[in-house]
Length: 253
Image (cartoon, rainbow, N blue to C red; front, top):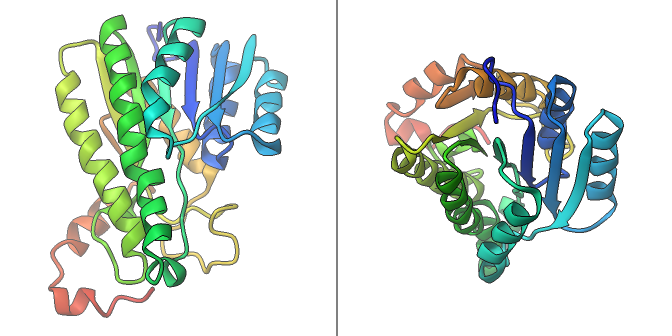
């Protein structure tokens, strides 16, 4: 159970090898999070992330296979993980891909893979997770969304639309959990300087995986519903959404 000051003792991460997920886990483990289950595609990165969690002091740190695009397997995956490890105080949804807009626009299959990985596949898994959180009567589902979903730009509308779908779904799912003891926290970072964006020019108000992790941990402790990182982006995008379409189309990539 999450203790009186908001510190969880167990966490399940979908997308366990992501930089942001690893940064969050690195802050949770020293603060009494004893059980860490990292779900993702099997490979060296997932194994390394699990080893880091163990080295940080987790009593249980295990990797389990998970693929957001394997929708038919999600319910069985969730039931197996919860049955094996017990209740989870926090579930972090951090799986996702950036894609390549220039390629994806000309390849519908590639574009659909981005959308499935970032939205529809995760929505499938989140429904199964929410059912377990509702049954256990507690837990926080932390969803890594993005300000890119606030209003899609021509330079990244495939990625942006996938995050917009995930964000809207998460809002509704959070509303459906009110009164159950479980809740949803939506995290909307700006441009995150890291492995996924390597080689790209940072956008204004850029952030880092470590800064996102700090904000997420504070949000878990406080029970926040929505987190912008940095916080100024809440007001920036409140304004951006009001811009006339003719001006929005000329926004730089």
